[in-house]
Length: 533
Image 1: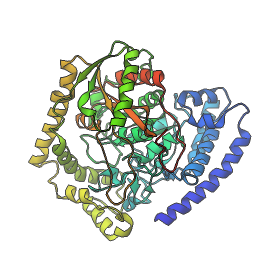
Image 2: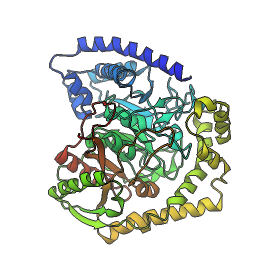
Image 3: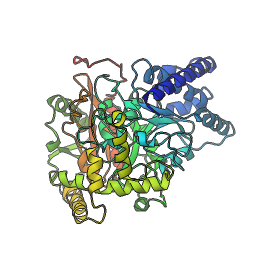
Image 4: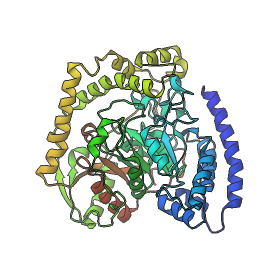
């Protein structure tokens, strides 16, 4: 499907959504605030359904109408790459279950968007944004998709992403894919969403669904969440299964929630976890999965020792000023703040790239063989050749240097890879995060998530500033970012990072902070940034 086909799909989707929106508005009970409802969370929407004031079908219709109005028209965020043609049918069945007294949990009937590198065994493609996989349907659901369906979530579509999860070029433009085009930041349309979960970040900020799933290798959940002004939670490696997710690298890849509130992230994480026989690392989470809903406590910061990672300040004066003020909120909620320097963060910069490139080729081939054996590409070499043949559509702005470098690597048997992996684990874990937590008797670390959203630039590529994503990403440890306010009219995120399987503790801290600060603000879709905002 080329870009013109995608435009036609958007027009058709808009016509369908417009029709169902009229029916939905007519059927919606009086007294329900439709605009607020779409911005509401799982508990509020669930309560409306429990009270008989709302159905899953009505909610899905409203989100489809908003996608048509905001994503395909109006500001044209371009965050949703494909709609699920069976979404209303699924919602209707869940409504019947509710009427019969069968409830699957808090996500029953709740609409969710999945990043388009998460396999769904339905009528939608799973493409990682690449035209090489356009129209290719996965043979079955990813474990994450399967778990969300079992929990009663309605998968209403897939979100656009930085193609191949931003592991294609050294000069890439985040939020762009050959299949989906460019996703825009709803807080300033000329600004970038960051990536690679670009569409998920923009869609949730713009209230195009209740929930979204992103994936992260290094920064791909927390960075777009911060740039778009939402909550993003990257779990411990092994808490959420990797099976059925188009990979970069198994030693760092994970899926996680992207939501408008910490409560929604906690409820969603609970539905996503579980032991998967197809992903051995999930067996390490046995006995370590917590009650994440119970962690949503207003006193979640009281008595907690938190290390302020000062070596992750300094990337932006404007961002630092915002976060410094928010540290006072943490103190007011009973946190004990200790200035620290996270050690050895300079010792895995180059070796991280070595690991990612070495794992990418074999991991991609394994995914294609297991979930898309009928695809026209079967390995990295095929993808590179496809891009070369279709350069005008696939490489109009940037190349495929990372794909070529990955193809040239020895893979998992190479000495350079094995040494790099050992190095990364040593300096990010036992001589990194674990060391500082132990020596300073800390419950977590805090720092700015990253810099402000940059102008989308097809000439020079992305303009990343300082980021707090790598330590937790390389270690495979949890990281949650929460809206901390605005600088120069753009969202700022504050991050909480902890040791392995400390999600419940981090959720408690993040929730207590969020409820005390309430810094999230819905976007107004300006064409450019209002620096006075």
